[in-house]
Image 1 (cartoon, rainbow, N blue to C red):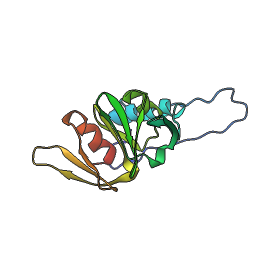
Image 2 (cartoon, rainbow, N blue to C red; image 1 turned 90 degrees about the vertical axis):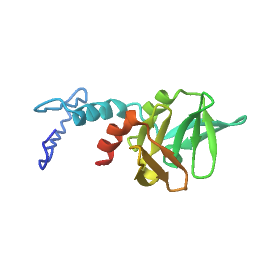
Image 3 (cartoon, rainbow, N blue to C red; image 1 turned 180 degrees about the horizontal axis):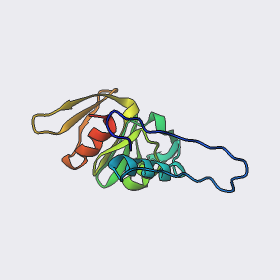
Length: 154
């Protein structure tokens, strides 16, 4: 990854003779940004813009863009939109693998959609209070603080 003040160069070559798409990354050294880039590229094939969720006996196909937060409560993944709540039969890590890059894991039991983030507050004990556009709020765990700061450029 380019150092501070430097921009990463991107080169794209389109060739109809290529048999299989291949992404190559050239870097001076391995860094957290390179790791995130590799993870993001791997995730591209798995990403879905819809998530199958349930409310009671009803099954819904929920657009990822409508999801505000996913949180484990009572050992089940709860999917929260602006005003509704659903559940998912998947584990949190499985859901995380399906979601677009706008979703960020903030603790072992929660993922938030950055597109619906209103603002952040740093608490006196060093945690980050995350306030969503619908008024919901949550807290990051210390373990995820570095990733949150890197993702948000703090």
